[in-house]
Image 1 (cartoon, helix red, strand yellow):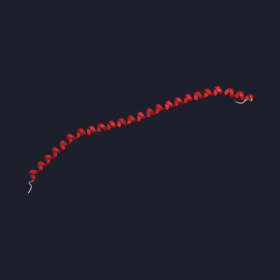
Image 2 (cartoon, rainbow, N blue to C red):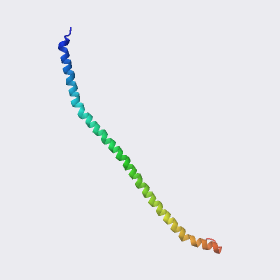
Image 3 (cartoon, helix red, strand yellow):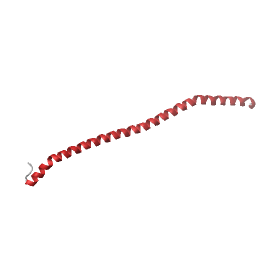
Image 4 (tube, helix red, strand yellow):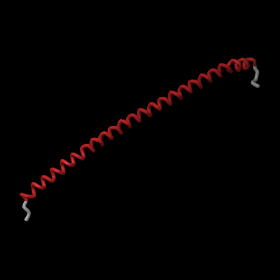
Length: 95
């Protein structure tokens, strides 16, 4: 038969040794994993901010171009406007 009084302390010692070893090995790994996950979370946040910034820049550029087109259209209408009205008053047709 087994002598549990002699085996029990050995089992406890082995379990204690494995537990201390696992903590010593896994703690730095888990800390590094947590740092990497935090870094990914920050990059994801910055990525969204970067996309928003890029979209804002694109919209500002489009707005500036649209304003320029509106100015050109108004200029063209002012340039052509009085001539057409004068012709209509005189009853002339466009060539």
